[in-house]
Image 1: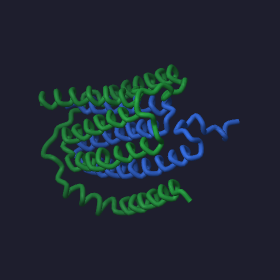
Image 2: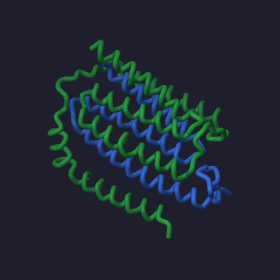
Image 3: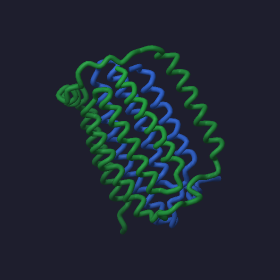
Image 4: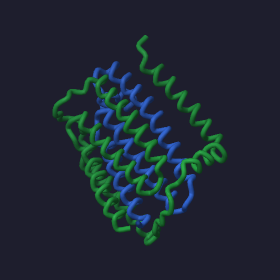
Length: 99
Length: 163
């Protein structure tokens, strides 16, 4: 297996995740797209860990997974709060700080 | 070697299609289910790369916990179930251009930098090696991450609590 094929797959997944973050209005869907991007990063870490025969890459991907779980917890709490205040999960409603 | 490449191809195709499903579907619940396919595909890729511990952590934490959390989020924000227009904003065209530019640039860079480097796999990484790394070399970051997780959970409860 080439190292490239994993890196390119990760790049494509990262790009798709970025498209979701840019385009989606529903906060839960934006968080899902962020998860796609984090997964792409994890795939890179594991691919390099296999290429270099080095376990630190796997340890770092475990850290990324942990932080992703924390991020989803806090993110969903914030979206719930937004939903309670604006009666809709759309992030476009939140524009008080826009000039 | 050939079998591994075929497996990679099938998994990669499924993952990319499901990822496009996550960002394109008009149904919020379907997006969560497509996300399960992407995450399971990633776990299978980790097994292909002989990182079995990370693969199982991926299955347990992502598919087991994070997706359930997403489904709770969908339920609590009362997203309508059926097909739904208006899940996307009006930035589709600029977003497609930016995405293609990003993927193109990254691919060109990767091909240029790592042209023919092969991954040669020996035995699967023993979980004991990862444990040694975590509790020897990375013990301080590990404790920091534990505190962060605790703080995030307390923060989530404080934010979501009705008072």
